[in-house]
Amino acid sequence: MGRPAYLEGYSPTGEIEERDLARLLRLHDTVPSPYDRALPLHVTGSAVVLDPTSRRVLLRWHERQGAWLQVGGHGDPGEVDPVSVAVREAREETGLDDLALFPAAAVRPLHVVIVPVRRRGAEAAHEHADVRYLLATASPGLARPEHPGAPLRWMPIGEAAQSAEPNLAETLSRVSEVLGSVRGPTASA
Image 1 (tube, rainbow, N blue to C red):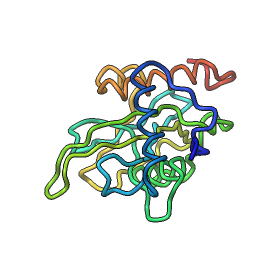
Image 2 (cartoon, rainbow, N blue to C red):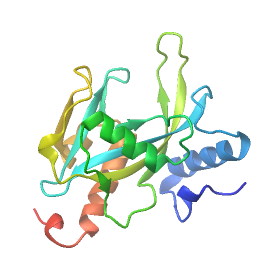
Image 3 (cartoon, rainbow, N blue to C red):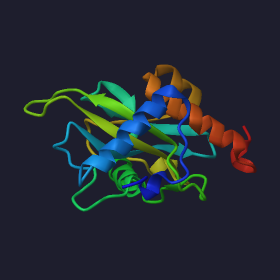
Image 4 (cartoon, rainbow, N blue to C red):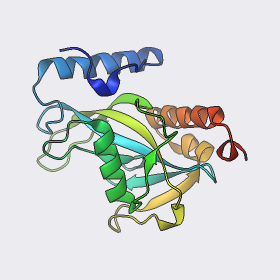
């Protein structure tokens, strides 16, 4: 079947991501709908939300995982593009309507990683082939959690990375790299 369009030009960094990307590509090659939640491994889309002015990231408390994580999740029926899933989920989970890819020219994922998901009720433990993007907002003060059990927290990138699980710490490291490569007012501070 070949590489899905959203992964065109994407190159993994390191052995772990190479393995994760290979599993994601096999998933696309072997099942008709890699977004199907019934699969033990399925595609999800997520995003780190950035306030470029303050250089802080917005994390959401995920009770099931017991951790502060990026926003995102599963595709709705018919969704087959992880960036669309990531943007929709980020808007739903943060209340921010102005989210856009950062930098604006970014069309490829920031990070591809396979993460374990704990069993919950009748739902078995499974894995997400998480395709991560970087989104920015110009209105960080408007962020609102979608419900009281999912609080949000703006954090400096370094602080967020120190308390994050390793795969999110890697994603946040890539956010820092992107910020370092951006010229202009958002690169200062």
